[in-house]
Length: 225
Ligand code: DX5
Ligand code: ZN
Image (cartoon, rainbow, N blue to C red; front, side, top):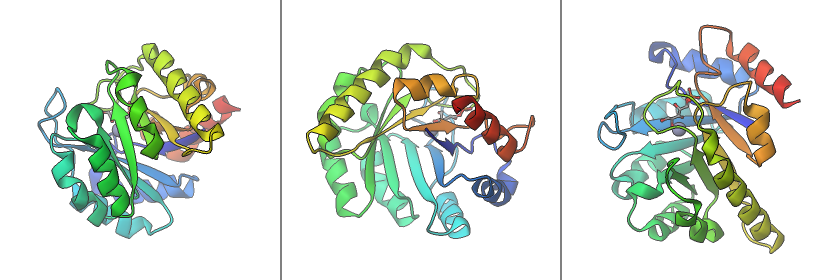
C-alpha cells in the first residue's frame, strides 16, 4: 500500500521544505485538500489553485499531485486545478450533479478522474461510475479537518469497491485505484491494506511534532511489513 501525505497539519510557511522532506523520504504522491469555506460542515477554507501551482513548480513533474475538492462547485472550477498542474481531480459524488460529464471533461483535458464519497454515502452511488473512473476515494472521517478518529464502519464499503474493481479488471476493464482518507496511522495502516486499499492518505500521522516525516513513514511501512 502506498502512502500519500495530506498537508493540512503542515506549517504552511514552510510548506516547500516539508514537501521536499516528504519526497526525500520516498513519497511520490501528494494529496491536496481543497475546502472552499462552504461545502464542509465546519465551513473551513484551506487553499486553492495558486498554492497547488506553487507546489507543482517546486516539486517538478515527477511527483503525482491529486486535488481532493471539498467544494460546492467542482463542475465549474475543475479546470483551474488542471491549469495548476494536478494529475488527478477527485470530486465528491455528493457535490456533483452530472458526474459522468465531469469524468469526460477531465479525461478530455488529459487528467485522471477520481470520485470520493463520505462515510455515510453508500457504495451504490459510485459503483455505476467505475468503468470510467481512475480512482475511488473512501472517506474514513467526515471531511473538514485533519486529526480526526478513523471510522471503522467503512470496511464493508471498501471491500465492496475492492471486489468490484477486481472483477472489472479481470474482465479487461480499468484498473481503478482505491484510496482511503482520514485517521490513518501506523496502528491501522495494515488493517486497511488488508481490506484492499491501494493508497492511504496520511495527514497528522505523517506531519506532526512527534517525529520527522521519514521517521513517521518508516513506522507506517514497518507496520505494513
Ligand atoms: C479531511 C481531509 C484529509 C485529512 C487527512 O477532510 O480530506 O485528507 O485531513 O488527515 P488525517 O490523516 O490527520 O486524518
Ligand atoms: Zn483529503
